Image 1 (tube, rainbow, N blue to C red):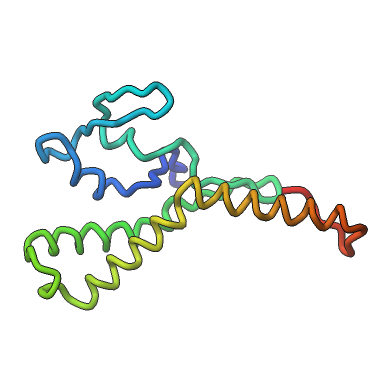
Image 2 (image 1 turned 30 degrees about the horizontal axis):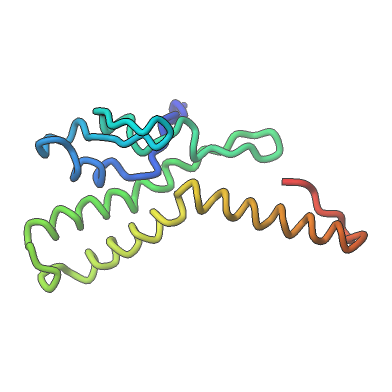
Length: 141
């Protein structure tokens, strides 16, 4: 049985490596908005949270971090080829597809997107409860 991943990146490591110090792919400068400080951080510890892509459904833990592996891998390859070509007219349709898939996945895997969806659902449920009984009752999120 495979060990469940813990470190879940909401920014693909292949993208983070493109911004690394000296292009070495190991560390980057990170701005911490809460402390207003800049620090060096390893790529493995940047743009991630522990268990970010894990949810509990009916008491069972579901880890969907691996669902991003294919799109992240295709994105990394498309980025590499785009940088080598230095011209968007030279990349293939498959690479355009990988780039657009990567952008779409990136939008869906951010904390803002997830918290916004949750807030909208909770607001909607609260509004329905104010209106009156709903059949079937809406369970809190």
